[in-house]
Structures are given as structure tokens and as C-alpha cells.
Length: 408
Image 1 (spheres, rainbow, N blue to C red):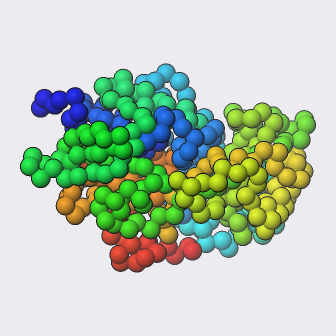
Image 2: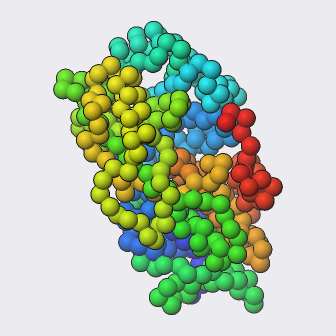
Image 3: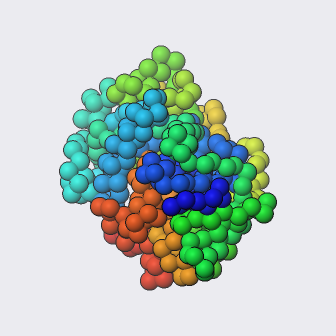
């Protein structure tokens, strides 16, 4: 089918990691693709920039693990096409009190999905890492080979470059204000703030923290997504111990499930510093962020984090306080159940508009497979080999809190 310059097979709205991955997938399948971004490409105002994200296969929800395993392959496939690395391999370690329901669910999920793992008690873990990682006596740890660190901004650039190389058209500073149904020939019109209009057979919406606003404008649907602004903290490794915590050795990415959900990565982006942070953040309006300096961590969060670092790293990491705190490094949108939204908009648009959002601070690692799924939905109306019932919009109509999880 021949199209004019402003007509496309697929229009992807939002050029963060999910939209860029989707545009790469559709362009790779010889579909005329347009990728629109409201700000500059590779901007720092959303959820897809920064220096590191964790990738892990250990999920208490067993439906994520197959997606992560596919994503590992797709990350490596994209790297082979671009010629450089964005994924850096590491093992992964989960730790929690022995009776913790989340950790038990992780073990069950690993077993169900054939992910090899080892369970270690305090003494075994101490020997494993030569005292660099320690847990209380009534805790256990679960170790797997499926961990690692991804370079976010570099990854977004990779997918945009690959999309461009496969024929996609990329336009930034193009804020989308509406999507309208073409009642004459089908498809949709995507309308921008500056008055330009683009026609597409299909449209994929991946606008991160702006998803709720745009979906309400376009489809009249209230999606229960809350944008959050999170703090990313870096802590100094004490002199003489830097090598033991660096990427490329045996030090893992990690997650701790106790009173707080604490996570971190080996030292990579800043030599001598290790990233350790608390999952969660402060509610924000993506269009009215304060951009204020300082540490948004409340004392009741920062104090337990300091204690955790002192107790886990045997004094090898300075627990006096983070030496760098990036308050604007991460903004993400979370759903009540912290599961994604991957679905058709429906209504008058039927299957012509697909929505991907609500990635709840754990979606980046899965962006290659999410892009593949969104492309499948747009091009064929179904996702190959994936059960999407957990990600449907209708789940919030059945239960405002979304999916029920036994381990919570």
C-alpha cells in the first residue's frame, strides 16, 4: 500500500524505552512507522533516562519470568545489530526473612519456570561472598544467574537508531494532543500541539507518566495510574573494597524484602559508588514537578536504609549517608497492583489503538519483549505466545485494586 508523507502503518506516541522498542519492532517488520516524542529525544523528564536499571528473572508473579527470559534474548539480539552493549551481565540475589511470603513466591516461580536457583542461609551466604553480603540469622537468600544491569539512555538510543536504520521516521518536540477515529477509511488521525496531523492504520500509545491524561482525553477512560518521583542513592565503597563490589566480578544485583523493599546494583556508572535505594516514591504531576534539589527520602526511610547497608555490607560501604542522591533521575507510573497495562483502548477505536503503560518501576528490563508484544497487538491483533489477562484494562473494573496476589 502506497502512503503519502504523513500516512503510516503504525504511529507510536512516546519515544521512551517502550515506544522506541515498539518502533524498532514494527519498522523491522517492514511497516512504515512514525515515532513521535513530545520533548527532545533522550530527554530527562520521564522514566527512560539515567545510568542503570536492574534486570532479574526472580519475580513472585510467575507470569513475568518468561517475559524476562525472552527479554534477555532480545536485548542480546538488538546489541548484535547495533554493535555495542547496553546489558552487562551479573548474578542476582534476593534476600528476606525465612518466612517472607514474597521470597517463597519467588522460589515457587523459579521452580515453575525452570530457573535454576540456590537457597543459602547466613553462613553459606557469608562464604559465598567472603563476608561482603551478610544477612540476619533468621533470613535466607536466593541466588540465580539471571541478573544484570542495563544502561537506560544508551538503550533508548539503541532502539531509536535501529528503528531509523529500518526505515522509521522519528520526530521529537511533537506533543500529541489527541487521537481521532477516521470514520471514512478506518485508521486514526494523530493530532499534535503544533497543528500537524498524521494518519495511521494503527496507533500505539506509550507515554509513561502522561498515560492517564492522554488516555482520558482520547478514550474517556480513567486509568488508575499514579506518577511517582523516586530518589536514586549512591553510597561510597570504603577504600580497598571497591573491586569486590564492581560489575564484572561475582557481586550481584540484589533485592531485599523486609520492612522495606531495598534494591541495588554493583558499582558501574560511578567508580567507587554503589547504588542502593528504596522502592517507592512521592506522588507527582509530570507537568508540574518541583525540580527542587535535596533528598526526598523521609527520615523514616533513610534511617532504615542506612541500617540495612551497615548490616548487609559488613562496614565495607559507608552507611553514614548517600554521597549522591538524584531526585529527578526516575519518575514512573504505578498501578494499584504494580502490574502493567498492555491492552487495546477499545470503544470506538476497537483494536486500532494499543496502550502500554503503568510499568510500576520494574518495566525497563522488559522493554524488548513489551515492544514485541505491542507490535504484535498493533499488527495482528494478538500477542504471540503471551497470556495478557493480567495486564488488561478491564481488571480495574472488576476490582479497583487490580490483580489479587496471595503473597501480599
